[in-house]
Image (cartoon, rainbow, N blue to C red; front, top):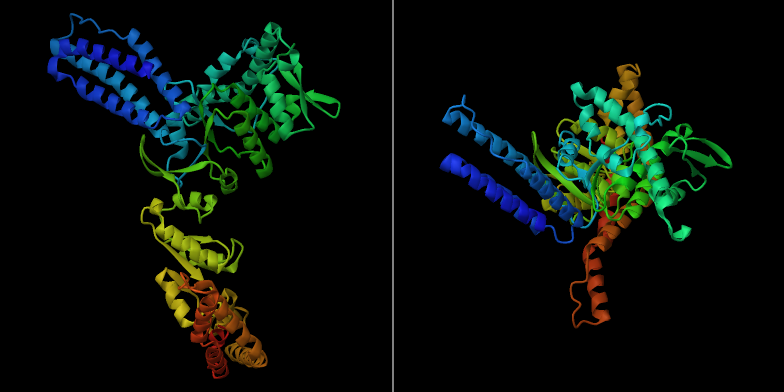
Length: 569
């Protein structure tokens, strides 16, 4: 790392100059030590991370250039010795603060290895502010990209953009437009930078293409420019649309089915896609690109296709996505999840890679990583009565996630509670009874899986208190309510009596399914197939299924008629 070594030597020389004047009173050794520690940590993670190496060189080169103009101020006559010393300490301290801050930014990036990344974390975790913070590093290979809906090419105005080139665009990309938008005093600058970037990108691409094509003397088929790369990528996304150069106006025209029209007439989704493509094509080699809300203003299919294409077009880029859209998170199959585990204003964060949770889908992991409350996994989906009930019951104390069937609830609950990445967070599961016996219910409870009294949650509506409450709200009198419930009980138990064999068979099947899913052959080494089959047969015999079948049928026959909901279980 030649640039870093040169920077450290220049800092040592600077320290010597200041120490001669300030003596032992200046903490140059402490500041210099922090810089070296940061560099050492970054270099430990730099192997195979070309983007980090380029960023480190970029920061080091920037401060080397700063040091070329960083002299020691001459003491003025109106300053006392103490005031002069305080001034020197302040100047040197501010300089070191900037250096240390920039290397700290690169420390955060050192957790990114050989894949693209999705930043996850709850609301208030500081994901967008983290991106802006990283963007401020003094290197050109960290770029922030944010979607804009209102994109407009200004052909008639802004003639200063007529000679725009790729270098000018890369300078414009160094501006953190999103940060400007968060400052009340910078709203004009935000609006100007935001609206102008699309125009700058298009004009720079046209100008660069014309200049490069004019200077090219090889085989025309071998010629490559950002315009040719744009055309190639665009065909993968919108095969029926192509671009035509408008060299006179330094812009493009759109061609579709032999009809030409201006870029401003494109759909919002097409313009957003073009905007992202242009930005990514102009990014320096081996860059980090922070993408805030990559799915904004795009339908899911187009969003996935666009970012798949951009990742393929620029494999030298490490994309760092910031998204709250779980569909997009799920679409980045190869990207790593990095959790912003904690955030302390303004720039203290703890980042943790989310690895090894293979039994949980990545879009669910992204939501769980941002959750500080206990987790409750339930059956069904967001439209199910399970979710309507339990989210209402537990919304203040826990986060409720519907995840499908009861087997999934069990698997996710155990996976969450056993995953060290969740730092001791607690998950519980709630499942339907599904004809489970008391032993199965007890075993489930050991894994924090709670079982309802009912086979299905809809059977909750058979509870007499709920029936009574519902009928009362329909303005039935007390006498009418009692009669209707009694009529329901009689009809219910008559249905149970006529279906008792079917119900018993369902129970036996559930017990057998549970047995087959749970039990395993224990003795298999140096044992014949016959012996293994005998072991299974013995376990089936011990299950005593026929006896349990009789007990269950007897329980149904003698069930207390005052509890139809429990009979339904």
